[in-house]
Image (cartoon, rainbow over all chains, first blue to last red; front, side, top):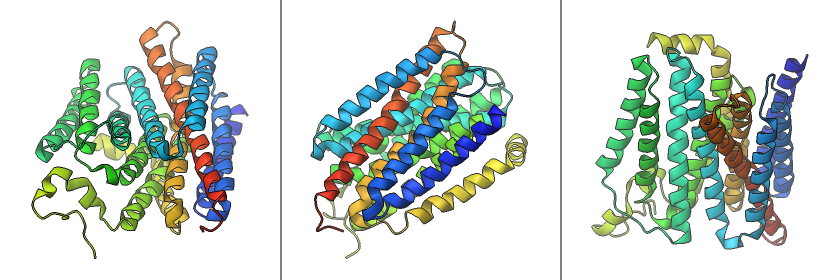
Length: 278
Length: 105
């Protein structure tokens, strides 16, 4: 009985997520949409407490209490102009949470389960990239981090190495915790290299893209637990975030590939090569 | 390769949800006006905090004697809560700003 109720609770939460995000895209109903999405999230959290065999409840509640206080405090005190930085920071926290879940779960997963193993590796890599990338984006908006030229080949090399390492760990059929930490380190470095060269003015588009990545990593975590609210909610954010990224770039009269792969420093030749269109 | 194909066929339902959710996500925000880009980004960021469900489950399943896993799980719940609570609160503040500017639509 309780298992069925859990499923129904998650189902209702998913419906609230979809409704919320839909209302959020219309000016008159945007605030209502935010509240409805929040109601869905609270429902999903409450339902998750009924997962059979849940231990460490006190620890979970402490973490939630601390996070709530911190989140509310920073959201209430932040200056209006610093809001995008804060969104980027929160987004990075979501990515980090997904990567941490992957790290804990790696020890529990049977090493010969390549299907779930691949999902877990994806969670680890995407979550870590989203974490470090979001922090750089935040630093750039804040003006703390300057544009740094990065050799694109180096960036792709790091990403390629991370993927190769993930494949190796999967196929080795043995637990390799150290290599998994190495994988996370490489993914974190890739996140840095990915955002470093992008100009500060383009950060909103980058944050939207990283937000979409956090959604994807929430979804892969959902696959790991066969949890449909995470899967559906994550993909919803992933695809909506991706479309939003394209729309934002379009509103700035830029193309996404232009923003991501035309690094700030290389614009020295044809000045304004970053602007296309008109 | 076989393992991955097998995984997809065993978890067919999940993959159907996956594909449909992609289209739902695109569909629901396809008509968003430019002024709402940033609040919507912030709102969907709060939603990606749904990973908190996974972090609650992972910490709840952890052996109380495994301190490393406990620490990582605790951090996961904490950070995911920051994402959720902060995300919704900051979105709400952004949208409050909109209300004070009735000229904009």
